[in-house]
Length: 311
Ligand code: CDT
Image (cartoon, rainbow, N blue to C red):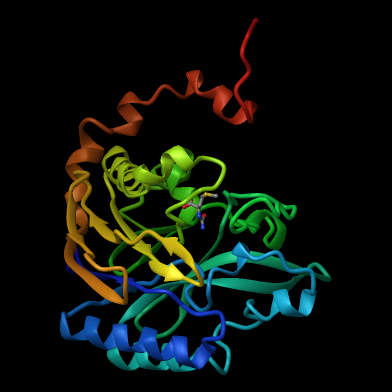
């Protein structure tokens, strides 16, 4: 079986608040069609790829909040995406807001699924590192209320066999935390897919604005190298409802090198032929975990949540 997977990072430009699901799904199908002409078998879409990035607004009406969530996947509105992918024999990663009924209660998650070439969901991930804040902070030019609208994911970081390799997923802020990638690295992950919506401006830390793109690539490239894995990072980009989102979608090889990148802030593909065996030499040498990790010294990572400074 071939260990080459031709992948497209399918960056999206802004999605307007009043853009309907069918309109967005049409954009996604258009990107799938372009990916097909490049011989792709896997397309990675961004985080919350079906709607605008709604956590930028403080909302109190639960019906309004829930209008950004999907109760079923696929639903009548998203089924055309699954049908088109199955007809073209292309799989995809899709981020969306998930409303689930679980243990007799309604749950809200920031979710990504991996769909195979037959249109079957083969893995689901629910975002664990939720950034931002839970209460309205009117002094901000825009909110980042992920901690209000979503619960912490409850599925860990599953790594599944698909597309001829070991595939893992995370979502946006997860990419900044080395624990995310190492948990998948310890399952032998060969490709990590991550969609993101990253505002250029983080109101509490304006000094970091000029570094937004640099930090994005820094964490994606480090994750790839330190775990000997491909990383596909995909943005929702551009000026969305007045808020600037970074682009910079990339495909990163296990060497840590960027091998394909988007150059606009709109709907755009970056394509690469990814040899899943490229990670082997890293996993067998410098990052041979079994030979070189010293987990007896890592206890603090799980025992402590925040830094404790001894006086
Ligand atoms: N969507 C998301 O997780 N965005 C965050 C913004 C952090 S600033 C509050 C990110 O890490 O890109």
